[in-house]
Image (cartoon, rainbow, N blue to C red; front, side, top):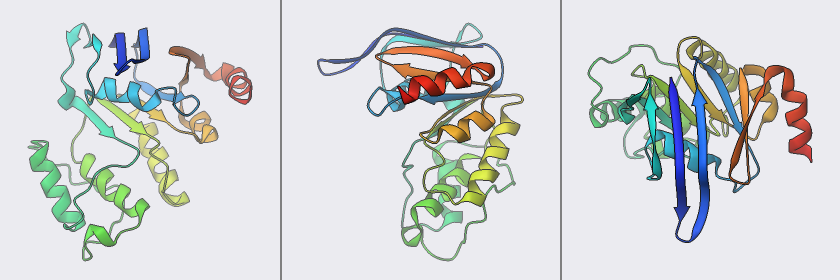
Length: 210
């Protein structure tokens, strides 16, 4: 399904990735872990089409349309002088979403402006707007940060449901949360990526501790 090849990705003179490949052949939930600064966010941004790199990405051997990517960064941008409903409508227009899904994932108040929301509530407002459309590929960067426990469980449940038919990739420093929901986890280290299946999670944990 998804084939990503990064021949080179650098910022200035600093090389982040060189000759890195990632293949995801079946739907599922895939984790992404690694120490701070190894390039987890950069890798997700490459897949999402948020940053340029030398190489390419294909979906079923066709050039991938980045409009089919649901992208949630660690700190999603929301227009603070709109309320949650207005922001969802604005997001739909911005992303040219024609068929709006009626389902709302999180209960977010409508009356106050978003600027009065907590960090977690802002993220919920963004996710509600994002989930107005069904995508082919879902990318979440530290998506559980700032969410209360009830919201984390609700989002985990949704991610598991999406993973039955879609490819979902989640980065998180909360490794236990990934162990619960991921079909496989990728470890990013020194510009290389290594895949660990469920029965290898203990080995991954030892690497992370080491």
